[in-house]
Length: 138
Image (cartoon, rainbow, N blue to C red; front, side):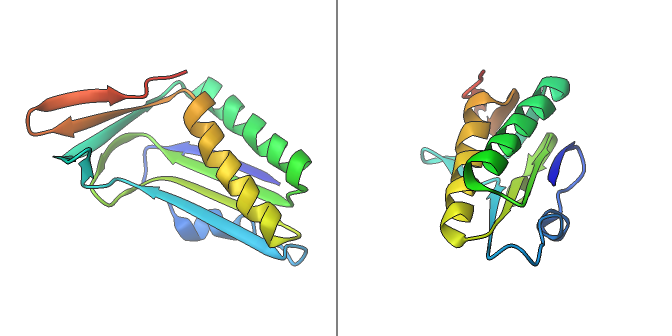
């Protein structure tokens, strides 16, 4: 099962993790990306995330399909937030269930790294003295 979501509402760790539960899974990994209070020594006030949702969903589904094929994943859940997020709020959750732990770790790492490289979700960081778009790609 593949569970992909982009939401303007707060993300739920329990919901994402519950989506990957399986008695066939010996390894379950969960990555939670949150808004940190500083970047390169500068205090962050908030973040804004924007997405081109149709393409972002498609790219996230491709990531999940690769995980299923490459690591024999039973379930993959990728949830990403859009809109304005405050310090400490969850921006992204990735959960992966595989038969064995090593595959679950590798698949989760692949998911977040590939998401940041290929999915059209853009992040704008706000500071006291202005704002900057971060890694505006693809």
